[in-house]
Image (cartoon, rainbow, N blue to C red; front, side):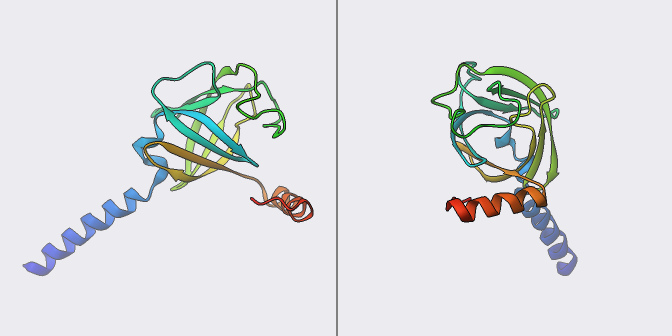
Length: 154
């Protein structure tokens, strides 16, 4: 009688542990996030109480919808001009997001491509979110060669 009971308890705790490693299903993701820092396609957000229209940010919803206060850039953030302290008032865009894996999400904005792509959730807690943009293999190869020649860490 004890062995089946231990097996049931072990499986319940195992499933709970695996679920806790799934960052994309974490309820902490479904908050209002203000862009705090941008480092070579690593976006660092901090939690905010309300979705402020004056600062760049992003808000994930349960239904797969995302709202973003983004710059008007159409080809991605330009590191030199699109830093949060230097950007003009961002505009509100509606898009969608979906789970790709336990720690990866795909975000799509049809009318603004600055935050469209696949992102790894490298950090998620009650006050901070870090998204690292993922590129295709050929783009990563080009970026690696640029990083080596320019001594840029990623």
